[in-house]
Image (cartoon, rainbow, N blue to C red; front, top):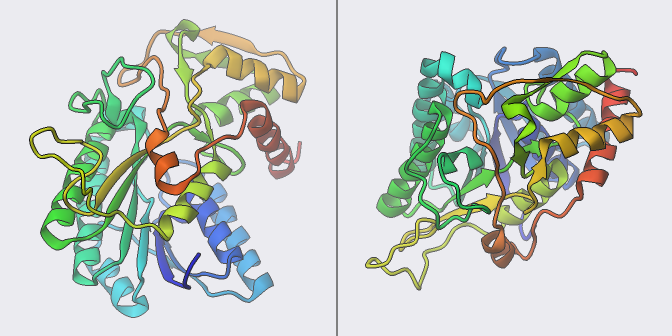
Length: 344
């Protein structure tokens, strides 16, 4: 990084938040982390992530501060911004989960819309130099153009979760336009790796394999995902911290691009550019673990999509890097961590 910055990261007890925090603490950056430690999935895993960050910080005597609280709490957020005066904000907190949003819509409206609104307001008031926030590949919804490109339309979400992420992008643009707030939205594609989320397929499949339970395979196995290894996500985030969004000098209002603007606003896909069939992913897990799975084939779940794949030309042009970890190498590192963490 060019100059030392004070970086505020939301969702630090989450999967991606933990990993970028770890990297930045190791890099000697001053980090303020916030998280509400909600019970959407195993709180012990979240607490263990925080313990790991504490241990790393103490080992290298670096500035790392954690504050527990909700992004929906405007007064809590305001105090954080006033007290610690961050230069950069990485907003990774959100109510996650496509399927969970169908049964619990109010949680998503509260966290992903009201919470994001509070983040934007604090960034505006405190003249933040760079806001980077998590969007999602789910915004592509009913789109059938593979690979997904940032220029594709994203006006037909198939889940409330996706709708809230699309809304975040629209809100971000309004603040970029009105207040010249540099905003960069990242459409993450199926992130996996050590310390991963227990509600996602890699962890669910691995857990079932080790416990000799059937793996629930939806759409009768006719699914594919652009699995993206966590280390690649972290590398992208680190590079973006020093490269805030800028206005697009070639932007044409008569032929507008949805991923850039006359304002300091950018949207990027962050994926591995390879769509892996779900059954092939399971085969890689079986080979690495050395166990054969039992499979329970089920229909398509509401709010789900059949396949995802990312066109990542834009992010490669912007920072000179794109995710590249192979599925074989990524699974090897993931299973090594899984066995150590769960003492198998």
